[in-house]
Picture (cartoon, rainbow, N blue to C red):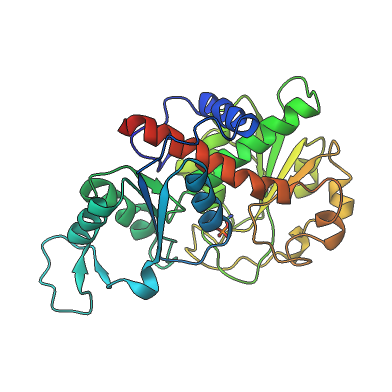
Length: 319
Ligand code: CP
């Protein structure tokens, strides 16, 4: 694997998930693989899980890690090609990426959607420019429209529990929109659909009218507008809010879509998943998050394993 930006960067998603399960069982197997190698983590946006889990994963492999809050500590980046740089942006991404590639063997980048211009966000411009100019493998720590480390984590978590519960047949996996007060990106939901489509799952997407995702990610996905109907018989329920794609970046008002115990009772004693952070009693009730059905903390723990798996693959490519 040369980079980790979309599911297309891996030869086989199911095989990568199996590798992640193996890393979960044997976390120390490659503890020298990253010796004398440096990982640079560049954050244009806040993070708890991605930042700490990826740093820990790199340390588990013997790597050195440098973390930079690029939005606060870096020069303002120019991303337009051929422009006269007489505005506020002091450094072009061509130099910035190439210079960082001089110091780092692998670079991770977080660049959230700005939710003002769908076309601009859906180009994922900055991460692709880093891929072009850094000269080293690039890992998405969540781009404008994808969060692949989260998706690998989610599949690892589902597969672990599927085996533990000895579920036979295709598990029913429901991705449900839930309310929020702020405009959130579509990245986690997009990626979840992109990655689950490559697994042998019965995937169902449920959301209110107006919360349709980009057709790029929903092609072939079953969409059910009745949340309670969708939840019936589910083995895994993945909760996430996202802002409107069609009315780009607008908050969707549908408070009845909050996840309650009553709704979880419709499922096949489903495991409840969420990428976190989650706003309690706005998105999911306390009674659900604090119940045995919730695996959100274990899911967050698996972020370390997923990041370690990806770094192992990239380090093997560098050898
Ligand atoms: N799920 C996730 O990416 O968490 P952070 O935003 O805290 O990194």
